[in-house]
Image 1: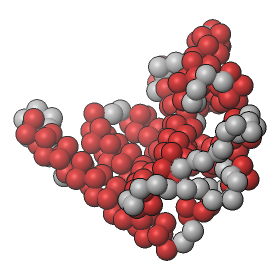
Image 2: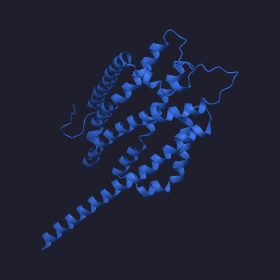
Image 3: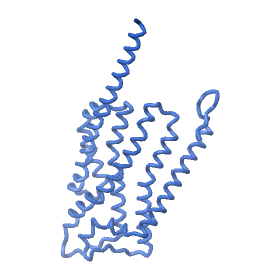
Image 4: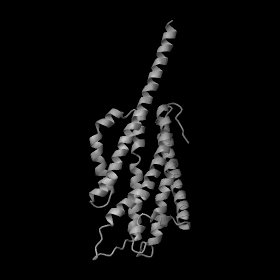
Amino acid sequence: MTKHDGRTGEMPFLDHLEELRYRLLWSLGALVVLTIAAFTIVSRYDVIGLLAQPIEPYLANGKLIFTGPADSFTIVMKVSFAIGIVAAAPVIGYHIWMFLAPALHPHEKRVVMPVLLGATGLFATGVYLAVRWVLPAMFGFLLTFQSDSLEQMISAREYFSFAVSMGLACGATFQLPIVIVALTALGLVTPKVLMKYRRHAAVGSIVAAAIITPGDVLLVTAMLGVPLYLLYEISIVLSWFVYRRKQRKARDRDNSAAESIGGAST
Protein backbone atom coordinates (compact mmCIF):
# COMPACT_ATOMS: atom_id res chain seq x y z
CA MET A 1 0.00 0.00 0.00
CA THR A 2 2.88 2.36 0.58
CA LYS A 3 3.61 4.50 -2.45
CA HIS A 4 6.40 7.03 -2.80
CA ASP A 5 7.14 9.88 -5.12
CA GLY A 6 10.07 8.88 -7.29
CA ARG A 7 11.68 12.32 -7.13
CA THR A 8 11.44 13.08 -3.43
CA GLY A 9 11.18 9.60 -1.90
CA GLU A 10 8.21 10.82 0.14
CA MET A 11 4.60 9.67 -0.07
CA PRO A 12 2.34 12.23 -1.80
CA PHE A 13 -0.44 13.77 0.31
CA LEU A 14 -3.29 11.99 -1.54
CA ASP A 15 -1.51 8.67 -1.07
CA HIS A 16 -1.28 9.46 2.66
CA LEU A 17 -5.06 9.89 2.73
CA GLU A 18 -5.57 6.66 0.80
CA GLU A 19 -3.24 4.82 3.16
CA LEU A 20 -5.07 6.27 6.18
CA ARG A 21 -8.46 5.24 4.74
CA TYR A 22 -7.16 1.72 4.12
CA ARG A 23 -5.85 1.38 7.69
CA LEU A 24 -9.04 2.81 9.21
CA LEU A 25 -11.22 0.41 7.20
CA TRP A 26 -9.14 -2.58 8.31
CA SER A 27 -9.25 -1.44 11.96
CA LEU A 28 -12.99 -0.80 11.86
CA GLY A 29 -13.58 -4.12 10.10
CA ALA A 30 -11.57 -5.98 12.74
CA LEU A 31 -13.58 -4.27 15.50
CA VAL A 32 -16.91 -5.14 13.85
CA VAL A 33 -15.97 -8.78 13.12
CA LEU A 34 -14.55 -9.40 16.60
CA THR A 35 -17.53 -7.70 18.24
CA ILE A 36 -19.89 -9.99 16.29
CA ALA A 37 -17.78 -12.99 17.34
CA ALA A 38 -17.89 -11.78 20.95
CA PHE A 39 -21.68 -11.35 20.68
CA THR A 40 -21.99 -14.95 19.53
CA ILE A 41 -19.86 -16.21 22.42
CA VAL A 42 -21.63 -14.05 25.02
CA SER A 43 -25.04 -15.18 23.74
CA ARG A 44 -24.16 -18.87 23.57
CA TYR A 45 -22.17 -19.21 26.80
CA ASP A 46 -22.81 -17.79 30.25
CA VAL A 47 -20.32 -14.92 29.99
CA ILE A 48 -22.85 -12.59 31.64
CA GLY A 49 -23.02 -14.92 34.64
CA LEU A 50 -19.22 -14.98 34.85
CA LEU A 51 -19.01 -11.19 34.84
CA ALA A 52 -21.79 -10.95 37.44
CA GLN A 53 -19.88 -13.09 39.96
CA PRO A 54 -18.26 -10.13 41.80
CA ILE A 55 -21.64 -8.82 42.96
CA GLU A 56 -23.64 -12.05 43.33
CA PRO A 57 -22.70 -12.66 47.01
CA TYR A 58 -24.22 -9.29 47.91
CA LEU A 59 -27.55 -9.73 46.12
CA ALA A 60 -30.64 -10.77 48.04
CA ASN A 61 -31.64 -13.57 45.66
CA GLY A 62 -28.29 -13.92 43.91
CA LYS A 63 -29.56 -12.34 40.68
CA LEU A 64 -29.57 -8.88 39.12
CA ILE A 65 -32.86 -7.38 37.98
CA PHE A 66 -33.78 -5.58 34.78
CA THR A 67 -36.72 -3.25 34.29
CA GLY A 68 -36.73 -2.55 30.55
CA PRO A 69 -37.61 -5.03 27.78
CA ALA A 70 -34.41 -4.19 25.87
CA ASP A 71 -32.10 -4.21 28.90
CA SER A 72 -30.83 -7.76 28.45
CA PHE A 73 -30.00 -7.17 24.77
CA THR A 74 -28.31 -3.85 25.58
CA ILE A 75 -26.18 -5.52 28.25
CA VAL A 76 -25.08 -8.30 25.90
CA MET A 77 -24.20 -5.73 23.23
CA LYS A 78 -22.24 -3.59 25.68
CA VAL A 79 -20.24 -6.56 26.99
CA SER A 80 -19.66 -7.82 23.44
CA PHE A 81 -18.41 -4.42 22.32
CA ALA A 82 -16.01 -4.22 25.26
CA ILE A 83 -14.63 -7.69 24.46
CA GLY A 84 -14.40 -6.69 20.79
CA ILE A 85 -12.32 -3.62 21.68
CA VAL A 86 -9.90 -5.71 23.72
CA ALA A 87 -9.63 -8.38 21.01
CA ALA A 88 -9.21 -5.84 18.19
CA ALA A 89 -6.59 -3.76 20.01
CA PRO A 90 -3.59 -5.66 18.52
CA VAL A 91 -5.00 -5.31 14.99
CA ILE A 92 -5.71 -1.62 15.44
CA GLY A 93 -2.26 -1.08 16.95
CA TYR A 94 -0.64 -2.95 14.05
CA HIS A 95 -2.32 -0.75 11.45
CA ILE A 96 -1.38 2.39 13.37
CA TRP A 97 2.20 1.14 13.31
CA MET A 98 2.05 0.33 9.60
CA PHE A 99 0.77 3.84 8.87
CA LEU A 100 3.51 5.48 10.94
CA ALA A 101 6.32 3.06 10.00
CA PRO A 102 7.61 4.99 6.93
CA ALA A 103 8.31 8.01 9.17
CA LEU A 104 10.12 6.01 11.87
CA HIS A 105 13.84 5.34 12.20
CA PRO A 106 15.02 1.69 12.20
CA HIS A 107 15.61 1.66 15.97
CA GLU A 108 12.11 3.09 16.53
CA LYS A 109 10.53 0.39 14.35
CA ARG A 110 12.16 -2.32 16.45
CA VAL A 111 10.42 -0.94 19.54
CA VAL A 112 6.90 -0.98 18.12
CA MET A 113 6.05 -4.69 17.95
CA PRO A 114 7.19 -5.53 21.51
CA VAL A 115 5.25 -2.48 22.70
CA LEU A 116 2.08 -3.66 20.92
CA LEU A 117 2.35 -7.16 22.38
CA GLY A 118 3.14 -5.85 25.85
CA ALA A 119 0.30 -3.32 25.73
CA THR A 120 -2.19 -6.02 24.74
CA GLY A 121 -1.06 -8.32 27.54
CA LEU A 122 -1.17 -5.55 30.14
CA PHE A 123 -4.60 -4.41 29.01
CA ALA A 124 -5.99 -7.93 29.35
CA THR A 125 -4.31 -8.24 32.77
CA GLY A 126 -5.90 -4.98 33.92
CA VAL A 127 -9.36 -6.12 32.84
CA TYR A 128 -8.91 -9.51 34.52
CA LEU A 129 -7.77 -7.95 37.81
CA ALA A 130 -10.69 -5.51 37.69
CA VAL A 131 -13.17 -8.40 37.50
CA ARG A 132 -11.38 -10.68 39.95
CA TRP A 133 -10.07 -8.22 42.53
CA VAL A 134 -11.08 -4.56 42.15
CA LEU A 135 -14.84 -5.05 41.68
CA PRO A 136 -15.28 -7.65 44.47
CA ALA A 137 -13.27 -5.47 46.86
CA MET A 138 -15.34 -2.39 45.98
CA PHE A 139 -18.65 -4.18 46.43
CA GLY A 140 -17.41 -5.80 49.61
CA PHE A 141 -16.90 -2.33 51.03
CA LEU A 142 -19.72 -0.31 49.47
CA LEU A 143 -22.53 -2.84 50.00
CA THR A 144 -21.78 -3.48 53.66
CA PHE A 145 -23.57 -0.25 54.60
CA GLN A 146 -27.09 -1.66 54.85
CA SER A 147 -30.11 -0.33 56.67
CA ASP A 148 -33.44 -1.89 57.62
CA SER A 149 -35.11 1.08 55.96
CA LEU A 150 -33.46 0.40 52.59
CA GLU A 151 -33.97 -2.52 50.25
CA GLN A 152 -31.14 -3.34 47.87
CA MET A 153 -32.25 -3.65 44.23
CA ILE A 154 -29.34 -3.32 41.83
CA SER A 155 -30.32 -3.36 38.16
CA ALA A 156 -28.33 -5.32 35.61
CA ARG A 157 -28.02 -2.24 33.38
CA GLU A 158 -26.39 -0.18 36.15
CA TYR A 159 -24.10 -2.99 37.25
CA PHE A 160 -22.77 -3.92 33.81
CA SER A 161 -22.36 -0.29 32.81
CA PHE A 162 -20.24 0.21 35.92
CA ALA A 163 -18.35 -3.10 35.54
CA VAL A 164 -17.50 -2.57 31.85
CA SER A 165 -16.35 1.01 32.48
CA MET A 166 -14.21 -0.10 35.42
CA GLY A 167 -12.70 -2.99 33.46
CA LEU A 168 -11.74 -0.77 30.50
CA ALA A 169 -10.40 1.91 32.85
CA CYS A 170 -8.20 -0.60 34.69
CA GLY A 171 -7.00 -2.01 31.39
CA ALA A 172 -6.07 1.48 30.22
CA THR A 173 -4.21 2.33 33.43
CA PHE A 174 -2.14 -0.85 33.10
CA GLN A 175 -0.64 0.64 29.94
CA LEU A 176 1.57 2.91 32.08
CA PRO A 177 4.61 0.58 32.29
CA ILE A 178 4.66 -0.18 28.57
CA VAL A 179 4.27 3.51 27.70
CA ILE A 180 7.20 4.48 29.92
CA VAL A 181 9.34 1.62 28.58
CA ALA A 182 8.58 2.75 25.02
CA LEU A 183 9.45 6.37 25.83
CA THR A 184 12.71 5.21 27.43
CA ALA A 185 13.58 3.05 24.43
CA LEU A 186 12.97 6.04 22.14
CA GLY A 187 15.19 8.24 24.32
CA LEU A 188 12.40 10.60 25.38
CA VAL A 189 12.65 9.93 29.13
CA THR A 190 15.28 8.55 31.50
CA PRO A 191 14.97 6.72 34.83
CA LYS A 192 16.44 9.73 36.65
CA VAL A 193 13.67 11.95 35.32
CA LEU A 194 11.06 9.41 36.39
CA MET A 195 12.55 9.23 39.90
CA LYS A 196 12.56 13.02 40.11
CA TYR A 197 8.78 13.14 39.57
CA ARG A 198 7.81 10.43 42.06
CA ARG A 199 5.79 12.80 44.23
CA HIS A 200 3.95 14.15 41.21
CA ALA A 201 3.19 10.56 40.16
CA ALA A 202 1.78 9.78 43.62
CA VAL A 203 -0.58 12.76 43.46
CA GLY A 204 -1.50 11.94 39.86
CA SER A 205 -2.31 8.34 40.82
CA ILE A 206 -4.75 9.48 43.51
CA VAL A 207 -6.36 12.02 41.15
CA ALA A 208 -6.72 9.40 38.40
CA ALA A 209 -8.19 6.89 40.86
CA ALA A 210 -10.67 9.50 42.12
CA ILE A 211 -11.81 10.13 38.54
CA ILE A 212 -12.16 6.44 37.70
CA THR A 213 -13.85 5.23 40.88
CA PRO A 214 -17.46 6.13 41.66
CA GLY A 215 -18.54 8.46 44.42
CA ASP A 216 -16.22 10.06 46.94
CA VAL A 217 -15.29 7.07 49.12
CA LEU A 218 -11.64 7.56 50.04
CA LEU A 219 -10.98 3.88 50.73
CA VAL A 220 -12.19 2.87 47.26
CA THR A 221 -10.04 5.60 45.68
CA ALA A 222 -7.01 4.38 47.63
CA MET A 223 -7.68 0.79 46.52
CA LEU A 224 -7.03 1.87 42.93
CA GLY A 225 -4.60 4.72 43.58
CA VAL A 226 -2.04 2.55 45.39
CA PRO A 227 -1.76 -0.02 42.56
CA LEU A 228 -1.47 2.84 40.07
CA TYR A 229 1.52 4.25 41.93
CA LEU A 230 3.05 0.78 42.23
CA LEU A 231 2.79 0.53 38.43
CA TYR A 232 4.79 3.75 38.23
CA GLU A 233 7.50 2.28 40.46
CA ILE A 234 7.56 -0.88 38.34
CA SER A 235 7.91 1.36 35.30
CA ILE A 236 11.00 2.97 36.80
CA VAL A 237 12.63 -0.45 37.30
CA LEU A 238 11.82 -1.50 33.74
CA SER A 239 13.06 1.84 32.49
CA TRP A 240 16.43 1.22 34.16
CA PHE A 241 16.82 -2.10 32.34
CA VAL A 242 16.01 -0.51 28.97
CA TYR A 243 18.21 2.53 29.66
CA ARG A 244 21.23 0.44 30.68
CA ARG A 245 20.82 -1.78 27.65
CA LYS A 246 20.79 1.29 25.42
CA GLN A 247 23.92 2.64 27.09
CA ARG A 248 25.70 -0.71 26.71
CA LYS A 249 24.89 -0.84 23.02
CA ALA A 250 26.06 2.75 22.58
CA ARG A 251 29.38 1.92 24.30
CA ASP A 252 29.80 -1.15 22.08
CA ARG A 253 29.22 0.96 18.98
CA ASP A 254 31.70 3.57 20.18
CA ASN A 255 34.32 0.91 20.92
CA SER A 256 33.80 -0.69 17.52
CA ALA A 257 34.14 2.69 15.83
CA ALA A 258 37.30 3.48 17.82
CA GLU A 259 38.80 0.12 16.91
CA SER A 260 37.98 0.67 13.23
CA ILE A 261 39.60 4.10 13.29
CA GLY A 262 42.65 2.73 15.14
CA GLY A 263 43.03 -0.12 12.65
CA ALA A 264 42.77 2.24 9.70
CA SER A 265 45.40 4.64 11.11
CA THR A 266 47.95 1.86 11.58
